[in-house]
Length: 91
Length: 247
Image (cartoon, rainbow over all chains, first blue to last red; front, side):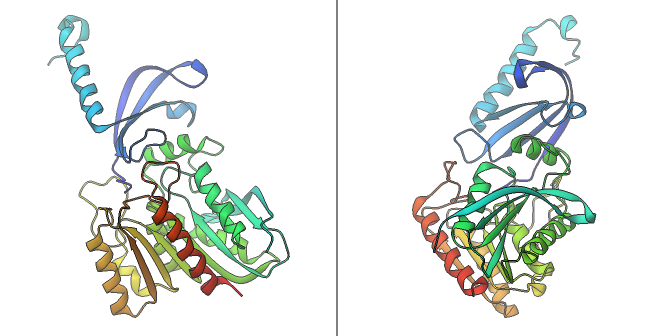
C-alpha cells in the first residue's frame, strides 16, 4: 500500500546532491512507503532537501527497515562518542 | 487492427482552470473509440505509468495521464515531484476530481471520441479512480488495489485521506476491482466489505482477486510484480473496457 504517512523535520546542514554539487539542507522528510529504486516493496525513505531551491535540490535515500534501524543506532553511537562540548547536545 | 500509435506531452485545463501537464497516447486511425484516464500512483507521473498509458492506446483507446504533481513541481523529475508533493501534504480530493474531469473533457473533445470515457488508477490511484467515478460522469472505472476505499486510515495521517464509504451511493458507472490476496491494504476482508456495500447499493461491479499476489502486482519495475496476476488482470481490463467503452 501507499502508507501516506510522512514525518517532516527541519534540518541544518549540507548534502551533496545533483550534479555532484553541495547544497544547504533545510528540510528532512521521512516516510515508510514504496521506494523508487530499491528492490523492496516498502522502504524507509529519507529526503534531504532545500525546497527553496526547487524540487531537484534533494538527496534521496531508500533503506530497508532493518538497515534504517542500524543507521539510527550508528548515528546515535557516533553522536555519543563525541565530547559533549563538541556536539553541543545536552543529552 | 493496427498497433500504430502516437504519444505526446500536452497541457490541459484542470482544477481551478489551471493548465497542467498530461501525457497522451492515441491509436492511429479515425475512430470512433473510447477514452481512458490513467491516474498515476503515489510515486508519480513516471515512466512505468506512461508505458501503461501507451498500452491503452495499443488496446485501441485514446489515453491520457494527467500529471497530478504539476502544480507542486512543474518540470521536475517524477521522483522529485512526488517527494515535493508528499512533503506538501499530497493531492487534495477536490483537485484530483477536477483534474480527472479535465482529462475526461479533453478525451471527449477529440474527433476520434465515441463519447465514452473510463478511468483507471493504481495503488493510491485506485482509491482516486473510485473517487472520480463517484463525482464525474464516467462510463467505467477500474480500481487496482486502492487502499482506503473502505476502512479507516490510522490516526495521525498527515494527508487528508478518508475512506469513500459515504460517496459510494453516488458511484455512476460499473467498477472493476483487481486485488492481491496477500495485500493488507486493502486486505481481503476490506475487499469483501466493499463488495458487500456495492451489492447492497445495487452498483454493478466485478472483482477479481489473485493468489500469490500482493500490493502493486502490475508494477513491472518492482519486486511486487506478479506476472500471472498482471497478465490476467490486463485481460480483465481489456474485456471490461471493451464492454463499457467500446462501440
